Length: 165
Image 1 (cartoon, rainbow, N blue to C red):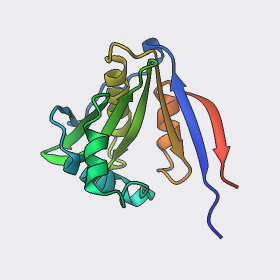
Image 2: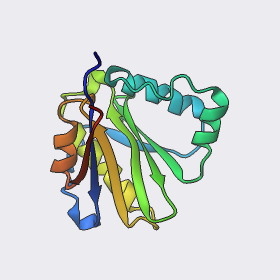
Image 3: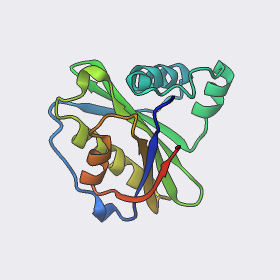
Image 4: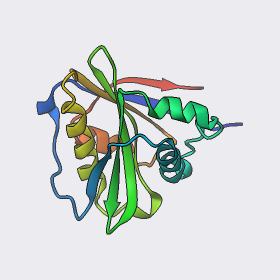
């Protein structure tokens, strides 16, 4: 029998709700300004593998090209000492909602104090999109045990919980 999965939906409705964690500890976050589906595909598997992110793994390259070429999707990559440490994707919806589509650190970079700063960067990037009126994200019980706490510590409010049981 499969383990029950609980999904948590969180939102932030004002940039002033952000509880910033400004110490980068040497993490450098850079926007990938050129769309390259292979990068997003690699990051999805590299970061999401340990957390069972597998919904997109079977997609053909053409679907990845379509996904990444969406002008409302933007990608940032975190580097530490030249190595890829994590990434996040933001999707700015036409109604003013900006979703943190994917967010995470690669397994080797978890537990090094990067999470709060990296999430702060994702939230600031979301609010810097002119149309943003609300930033939202979802996480689930399959994600790292600190994920939900990190979102709430940065100022997100839980607005919905779903269980697949």
